[in-house]
Image 1 (cartoon, rainbow, N blue to C red):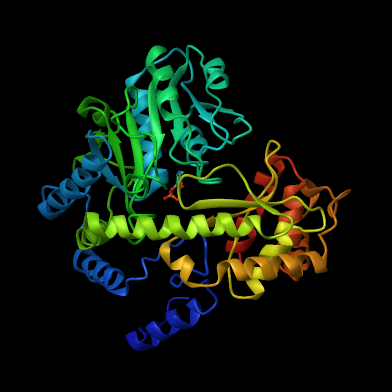
Image 2: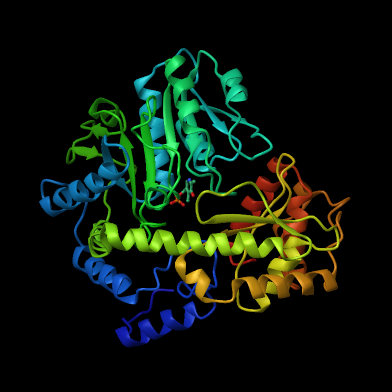
Length: 457
Ligand SMILES: *Cc1c(COP(=O)(O)O)cnc(C)c1O
């Protein structure tokens, strides 16, 4: 409720701090997803000050605030320099970068009927979202046994309505690199565009040894997304989408003079938008420099390598695929060791391991996005200890919702069900979702979000 009379700022700040007490910690490496800690507090503090400096500047009109053009040119230029050239747009995140790349492909390649995308099944849901928002179809092609995109299967999915093929560098779930050169060559041969989703890898892979080419320098790659709010270590709201040509970039833009108000020209999805994230991303990049990113990439990969080696020594656990980046997925081979129970055990010890549901034959697993800071904590010890505790606790029995007609549940019934299932942790919820087909999972997730924001969950 809006207070009748405004409240003092110190009270409000205290209230924010109190609210955050229930949040996962954003620094320290105990949360192995969502957050990217350099372990260098001065870098994050500098970004916060730059954010505040630019906070009230509105990216809506680059002619009114030329600072945003200067900053964006530097940020996008630095990314293009590293990732094979091209020209780009600074966006609010990977989803927006992908949305713009998909829109550009649709508008650059008009087809009869609904345009279609062909993606590996491991591609980020942002492509499904883009297809959904942009009125397009999507073919998500199962990946090979190594969890990398299956190029012949992608070729078979191409139709006359296909406008774009996608490769991930790497895929988020397992950190494996798709065969970018082959997918790009296929796209070129078939006269369609090719997007490389380097949202998570784009700002770490360039500083790691022995990574096959994956960027705009690869023949046939026409666009690429790279999130600065991941391994760029900038605060959230920072990504870049690169295009091979200015012509393709123009297909991402939007202009409208079809109303009696100010003329609208937007490079991205948003219109009015704070320049805070841009200023902070610029400051983070310039403060770290090539040298800083090399050190951070090396530290993060070392943490990942340590995790991979350590998992081999924990009975029942194994790494899925061969990660090239500091992203590792860990599954269980032992029916008595339930990874969802393991995640709850880790949570009870102050750590967050991200559950990933079983999909198309890929088993349920836990995902770790690592930074150098992850090595500082005793991640492996916690993993081993939580695995042992999970085996002792036993798996969640399947079929908990058998016979329940989810569609017939009222919101109140749904909320009660949710309360009883989350009472002991998230393992029960994850097991229920794991046992359902993707469409049913999606329907349940939407009900959950609605209940959450209505204050019923
Ligand atoms: C994180 C991620 C995205 C989506 O990015 P957001 O910034 O969360 O919108 C897309 N693709 C990959 C591979 C990612 O890791």
